[in-house]
Image (cartoon, rainbow, N blue to C red):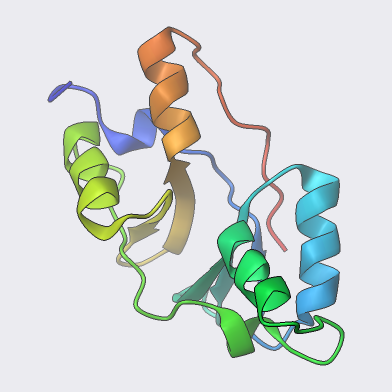
Length: 138
């Protein structure tokens, strides 16, 4: 696995949103697109945070509603990232070490360029070449 790099397995483009987007509209978008995370970016496409389906479970468990809150209210801001040139073994280790399922892929100049998930890794290991649905960038 050391010779397989993140860029080969990542989904790109990744679904991105503004941090001030309503959590409710983002939840609807995630359902429509069949995805379990979105990456919040600034105007230069640099990462500000990530919001996952787990965050929505936390909102629901706390009795919260999504209509009055933004992505920024619930996104994780200490985001673990990778580059397209990282070996997939490195990303798998990051996922295990940090108990996460989504790792945004960043480039120093372009900002967020993709995302790699546990689904992407397991699909690769099972022999499926294109595991993730196409992502749309906003």
